[in-house]
Structure formats: C-alpha cells, structure tokens
Length: 326
Image (cartoon, rainbow, N blue to C red; front, side, top):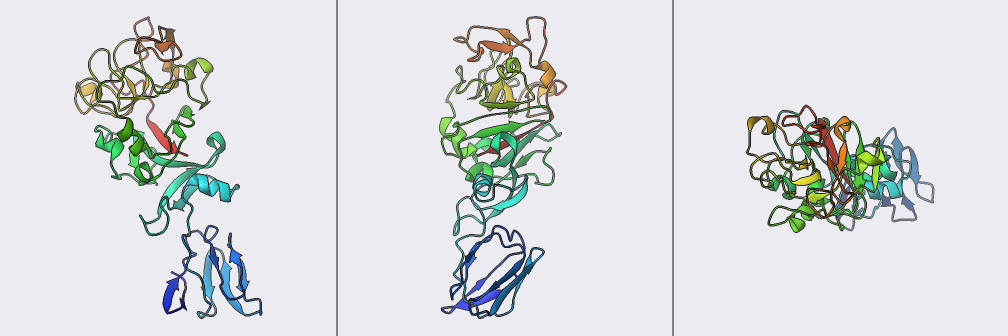
C-alpha cells in the first residue's frame, strides 16, 4: 500500500506497486479517469499536484485528494488484458476472474502469442516424478499445487476452477494444439464435472484441433478430445491399466493417451500422469471412424501394424503439457 485517502468518512488505500499499468481510478474533484499510469504526475485542474509515479511506484503529495473506490485493479483474465492492452507480452500478471468482493486476485501466467494470445495458464501436467493428476478430484475441485516459477513441473492454478472460457490450448515441449468453442464458457474443472461420463467413453467430443503448431496435418489428425476414453484392453480412468481422464490419442490396441492417469496398474505406468506422445511417435494407421478407438479423422496411433509407437513408461512421451483457457 503506497497511500491512503479519506472520502465521506471512509479511508481507501491505493496500491500501484504491483501493476500500475493496470490500475484504474478516478480523481473525483475536477479530475479525470486515469489508466496505464506507469510514470508521470496527476494533478487537479487547478494545478494542485496530487500524485507522482516513477518506475512503477507512486506516492501522494496530498492525502486529502478524494478518490472513488476502484472496482478492481486487475483484469478478469489474460483475454481481458489482451483486449485492454494489445501490446502486453507473455508473462505473469495479476488477474481477478470474479471481480471485487469475491475471491482475491491472484497471479497467473499469460500467453500473449499462441493462437492470437490472451490465454491464461490453468495448470501443468508433468512427468516430474510426482503424481498429482491421478484422481477425478484433481480435474474438478478447487485445489492448487505447484508454482508459477516452475512451469515444467506439476502445477494447478486457482484459474483451473475459477476462470471460465471457451477455447482450450495445450502446449508441450515439442508441439501445441487446441480447440476453439470447446468449454462452453466454463472453467476446465466445471466442464469436466458437467460432462464426465458415467461409463467409459467410446465416442469423441471433438476431432482434429482447430489450432496446432510444429505438427504436420497427418500428425494433427491423430489428435482428438474426449473424457474418460475407453482402453480397449481394460476399462477407463480411474481403474486399471494406463488410461486418461482427458483422452487425446488412441493406439490401435490398448491405452488411451492424454492427461491424467489411473492410480492403479503395473509399476511401469504407475509412475506418471502424462501420456501425450512425442512427436516422432505420432504415426498413424487408417481405421473405421465409426468404431472406437478410431478417431473422427479415421486414424489411430500405429502400434500393432509394425509401428510400436506407444510405451508403458515415459520414454515415448513428452515430459510436460501446459494447459490454457481463453
């Protein structure tokens, strides 16, 4: 807090040290609304200086200046930030999805370049030696873990539950992909909870991603989206064998690759929660799209047809996947 002022018997504080470029307030006596204040002075029209700002810090000369209480100093999301500050670069910003009076604002990482930018990081599923994504609760509740300072490790932001959006983006060390108009203006947690099937899914919700980078069309055609996809050699999340909460790739036989992993099973697949395949293993064979596990593009991962493009351990899988909502 860098200053206070009293108006109508109420004392307000003004914090400009975190993100002065985002704070919006108004001087109520002859002043004007001020935004994007990083450096400079704000004065009464009569010439009386009220506020000095320099290098991201501000101080008051006269604490009698009357300010209207700001509704919030922070955007609701990285998408809102992108709309108000088109030149904002990727990085950590403070956001407030439910506005003033609800949950406190919190820091979030914003991707301002991928697919036009405006994406908020909600979580990271990583094969980092710990298991965090092996229960339905991990995909539906309001828990948090990990750190914004380690975004190749398992991480779950408050935004996973609180930030509603429509577009969903996945970024891995080797490639990225995502779907537009998928989430129906829900948070990912609320979307999963609302659409979780009571039995193993044998149909796809979406086919080839709307957006992808560093993949050929043939490789992108191997990716789809559904919840709790059926492992044809077993059952589905969270029961036995390696299978996923959010299924995105399916081999000819067995497995249902994607995000999350059953808590049970053989030791080799009980060590990790991420089974998105490395780019070199995105090799497909044709199949009947009307028959699971074939995807809507008529393809599955080549496993039985001389390809062996899947594995029990992590040797054929990417090491982390960042999840974003817009």
